Length: 373
Image: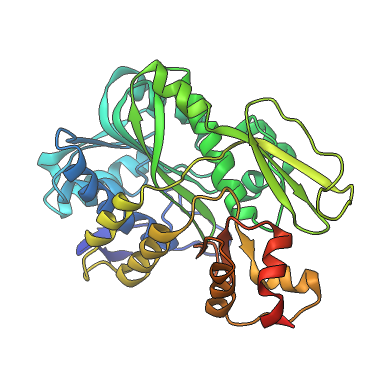
């Protein structure tokens, strides 16, 4: 079927029918991901003007590669599926992008070990970790990563998460952010094996996937600094208290310091640093044109990310209030109470009732009690 995305017309596989899956994967729900990718590439080109080459590592229909080529990048599309290669070539030709792109029919790990790219985009089905080492070994500037295996990432499929990410994920009330920080930790450790440090310049958890853009610094000291950003989160399943500590060695808390309960979880190693560069996120927002199909949603997401606090976990107001046996009030009033009490507070992009603050769970209740009761 034909679709229009980013003002380009492309041929993509039809939707699954009668239990028969198309041999080439296309996901219309990833349009926001792809729109933000193009806006990010535009903003990054202003940040690093030497960046010219872009690898669409699992090209499928070629939609990412075509959009990047139409935007002026020297593109390589790669896929092991012969049907995907043919479709990608047809879509490049349909949009007069053949001169800016080549299509490789091969294993992308082999390609990444043989050729250097300025930007590498990993958007596999499931975990990106089988491709991470090769990407960090031969990327100059920016690695873009999508992970769609959110259940393993957030701890809902615990054993799978441990196998894929060499970390302990825990299924908490901030499960989406757990996925973000488990993914970033695994990627930072992968990059460090090649003396490469990573800095997340834009990261978001949307719907069924996590997406991050990592700027690279090719120095052992930068890799060390990224590893120093890793640590562990301790979480109480009873009162939702949580705290974090830096370091690769976990020191589990047996008893909750807030409620005295013994149902404590320890997750890690997780990324405890910032997941976005607020100035860069603002630049990305400014690069989203009205013509993009998800323009309004993309800009709103960037606006929230730009002001989101760097705290390693977020809270859900409704879950807190339910745990306290109290009715929730308006989010703006709730956050104002926290700020008036002297705490930093911001909305979080993980949901309409999610927020971040430097207050502890006990301090949150004390600061907002008058308005809630």
